[in-house]
Length: 289
Image (tube, rainbow, N blue to C red; front, side, top):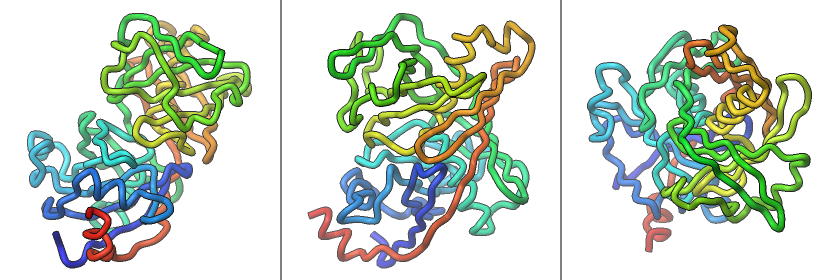
């Protein structure tokens, strides 16, 4: 392990991340190390960790190196690996810009969910091409306390169960994963979104992210919610020929999601770098026991 490990802290609509720059993939980050760094009391604190690696230096990303120089090796706050994180991609891009690796404009970022196109505005928000939503077959039900709701099964590179409810308080504390059935629908767990309407093409959500608990925002979740709402509202762009744009309020802010007639989804929102520093390697070694 390096004697000095640089880190930054950033967030996108208050979905916050520890950022570890490591272009040559030289830093060992086992699950226990990630969990220690993301611990909000004994570590730096974060919903997840963005490990910044050149695609050519990472075995999972080498095949994408010709399309995208940089790989977002994303980890959940408990140290588990995730395919994709929409807010994380925006913060990842903001870091690359800050570090001088990229300039404002269009860039490509490799993720376990594929290569994502990102547009960094000269001022303001960042837009991410999130790809297409998939709708796995079969009904899903989610439950909290004595209530149950049908949920839309949406895959945005990672799995989501979207339930429309009358009141966001019905989601409970969202500390433990909400039960769902059938269990076979999500063999690796699922992100669960509870959604209410705020107005025409305007919704609000709360989310339990697998491996992190309730978070202040979830980018892929906002996309899943927008496409589920569009299908519910009869606004499927593939059928209408018209893009569908939804404003999605999350506890940490607002995201704007647009699905085009070709199925491609774009997410626009803020990304902020808050601080930077150095991880004490003695502390990290002690945390790993």
